[in-house]
Length: 437
Image (cartoon, rainbow, N blue to C red; front, side, top):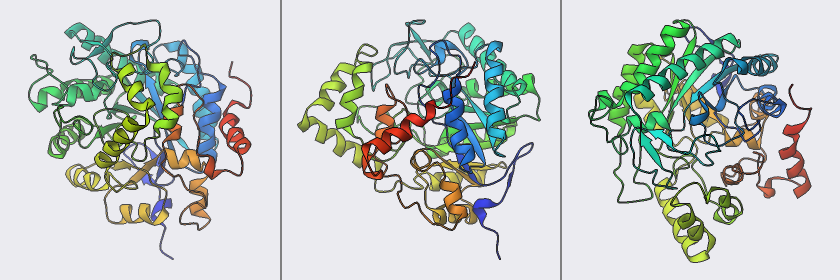
């Protein structure tokens, strides 16, 4: 019998993963305000390891407190964080699952800044346009400080016994703010032509290799296309697929072990996570952001009333397009043909045959999944049992996304459950057993 491509091991240079399904980077506000981790996050990650994924890419893990999106995300900004990440890695490894820590920095793209830093750092001093979060353009010293923080984060991940790290250079966070021609307006050698806009990312890769060596897994998540004008025609479109292919070639030459393909120059974006935009649910949680950005009140009023709700939903759907599952596969195939390292692709995967064909036809080497695994933690086990698609698939409603600002992350689509109580039990299950000490 031919081997099922989903369950073929994937060998990177210094890491082998048992199958071709990775949990993509996603998590909620499960941790402590100061950036220390707790048992809820360990419980969260263990759900997916137990469910059969080959590897987990952690949620956004800030390398500095200044770089976080919201409070209550575990960081890797100091050596005292290592024991927590070691405990988490050991819990995941018990299920023959690898754990890749995503080293991240929000730059200007934050949701709830917290009390420590009023001013975000970015490539630019122009406010983030979606919510209006203010920022200042980083100085050379601040760039050097941040590069060193990424290298130190990689060292801590290795000391914790984790299996590798990923740089989050997609979806509008700090690396995107340097890479994107629509955002980066610098006039020094970290701005201007593509090679100079890519310098910050390449400098971080070099610093990590100098810190941890060449035998520790390092991958980069990148947006294939910015689509920066998806919601606002006055915005520049940003980087093209050709631009990203060139950046990926430079990353390959610099010694990264894999490329992880996504889309969009901000988050959330109509193409990431592709699906509905449930404004009725959003108005219940968006008030958390009202004091954070100059455009947040405008957005809240836009979402609050039905005529403008419908206009926004229509624009969102038009910018997304008709395809959700495998949305990024065409771009991933182009990137895969241009580099010599494995390529991972994210984008709503939950149909076994779609994943098999993506691998067979060399669109990518593996897929990464977030929302459909939140809906069905045991999705991979269902595939192994012969199911082609879950009985209760993810509906791409994105209610998980809009609740995550202030509620525990989980599937909030009540139509997928027998009762509201069953939905709440599943969401709250992440808090059992008791907190990590």
